[in-house]
Image (tube, rainbow, N blue to C red; front, side, top):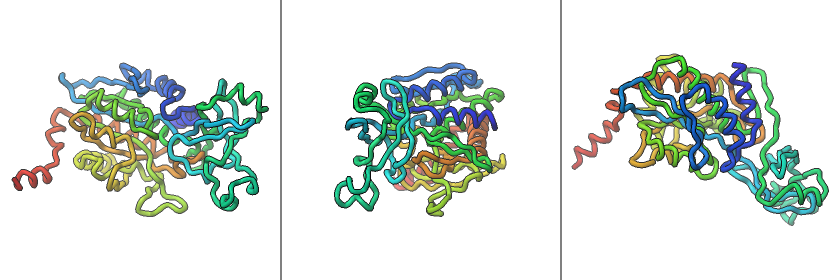
Length: 361
């Protein structure tokens, strides 16, 4: 568990905004290096890790994807020593005033998001939520120093320090989706000691928070037989809607909806029950809000599954996950891969719906 925690702390302490994932990708590359046979980076910045199976060629393949990018900010203008910013990804401005950030200028240095005094704000904003456009970043520098250190278009990321909380909880920014990257890493560790017939592609995708582009090109590029997207979902907590949130320390949430192949859901649920891995059913009645949106429809279509780790306070500077949910997710992924054989795809059909269509013609 310590090794898992240490890797997660390192990942969430590292910048990696959409389209600018290089710093965090380098850490993942180092972690995956001993676990895979081949590593490569594609044209959109995805990291591919390849582990060959032992089955007869041509072998089927499974792609396991976890996005590595995280939400953040970009500098839009400089006013004296203060910065105006815009968001990269979804951010609620209510949680921003007083938050420490890292400004990625000509060199990295700390800053703080501030809310100007009420009497200086536009009329109607004095008593409500101040929009991001009216918040500022304090640099601590003089105006001249700021103009030399910061350029319009520079990035800014959260700078909250990871905190271990009793009960195997870890808090920090960018758990969405670095927690899933760690779960995928756990699966690779287990596969290193196990026999599996199918080829495995581990993919840390780019730009999920803004374009889903990394997922789209990776599934088109690698043309996997199956795909599994690992992400986070809303955990139960203060104000969380009961039927739209999922308990922490109760295992991963298995996605169910049009973005997921029903036979894949059933296979994962059956396996989790057989292995006594706690799990939950997550209803995704429309799009899943994950990389599966584009991965499922690449080329002629890829049967896709979504597995999510419950997370509290999503898209805030202190998201919280339960470490056991990460390791359980990793184990379920590895066990599923080891169960795959050359007959698995024969069972993966939309049986009842196919019969209905055929009988109606």
